[in-house]
Image 1 (cartoon, rainbow, N blue to C red):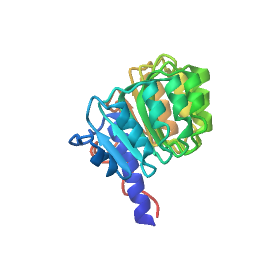
Image 2 (image 1 turned 120 degrees about the vertical axis):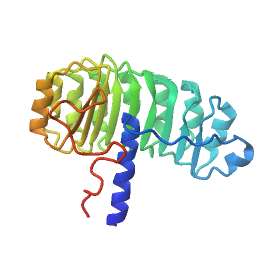
Image 3 (image 1 turned 90 degrees about the horizontal axis):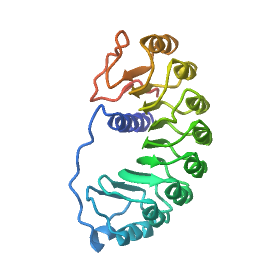
Length: 264
């Protein structure tokens, strides 16, 4: 059991490092989308193709064993998610090139087994996040850029198993990030292009479970980061993809933080 637990933490941290930009996921060759390959997809479907026919998405959703869909370059929209919403066993939906809005998220409300959701949320507001409140198994939420405001961020409070959260936009404010304190499982946070200041950093001071905080293009100061480091000396802090002076950690960026430190 200890070995399994270590592997799970290792995989989770590798995923986070790839999301945060410390390492790049190895590119996989695109798979030709034919009836035969769809039939053989078993539990996972990954593709680098830019165009995914709607009939392919519908066929994927018919596979009741399918747990993972990763479409790295496909630009799906809200209506495409309506087709995917029938994949009842889906646990991972990774669509980094897709621009999804509130209507698209409402289509995903039926995917109650979903553990990872990754897409460009530039059109997402708090109404969209409300549709995710019922996804109680969600562990990784990567929205890239959003239009979520402080009220919308409060919808995250329902995601008690959330371990990783990445988002950016002008609505990620000092008041908005306060809700993150209510997430007992949250360990990795990445916020970017946001008006976050030292006042917002204070919300993290009591989050003793937090392992990694990445901040890009925000308004925090060295003094605010030093105060956070004093409160959480074990916290791995990055500002604009570098360690702030005096807050360096002895770790390699091609290895996950905390590897080997998982308790039995």
